[in-house]
Amino acid sequence: MEQDLREMFRKDREQQKHAIKPGHEERFLNKLEEALPVNKKQKWGWLKIAASIAIIASIGLGVVYFNGENSQNSTTVVDNTTTEEQKNEFTFGDLSPDLKKVENFYVANINMELAKLEVSPDTKGLIDSFMEQLNNLNLEYKTLNKELKELGPNDQTITALIENLQLRLQLLQKLKRKLNELKLSKNEQINDTSI
Image (cartoon, rainbow, N blue to C red; front, side, top):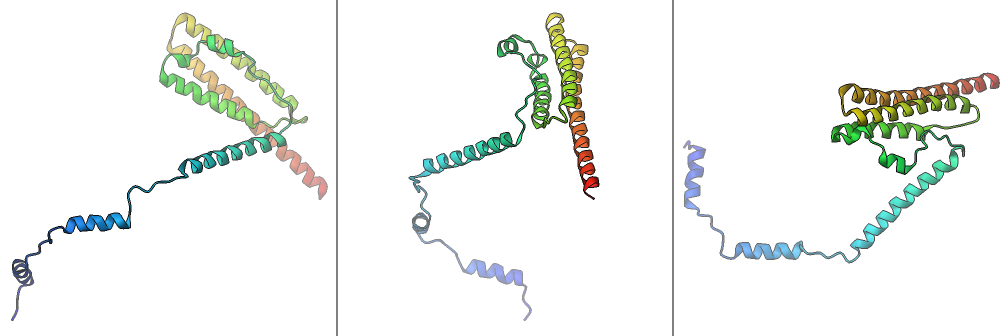
């Protein structure tokens, strides 16, 4: 009575021949097409895209407006070179794409740190002293760029340019820390006087 299941299934497969009826695939594809049409036209697709762009633009303008409203109206100019001077200026980023990426990275971070600064009458003196140091580093950077243009690329000049960018970024981060310390000390003084 014992039968091997594998043997039994093998015999069963041999006895039954499973064949697909002619036209089965065609009928299946027709039913599939009816249930899920492929070419579904969107009449208002462009309108949805335009609405999305309008929403994103309005959110962006709202953020800029509210950030501008909360900040002080005083501005500090660090780099007052004209665009013509900048076009004629030779930078070490012009030497290779990798150096351009490094320069863009540091310049973007420096500009971001500058944009985050909150100038108030209490911190204006501190910020101005840091900005003077930053301006000196900027002048040194321009001198190094001139040297690079005149003498050609060398490791010392390129390293000095990168270190200059790093120093500027570190200087701005130090200023940010000092401003936060001042803010915390004022908050502690207010809390001490209110107790």
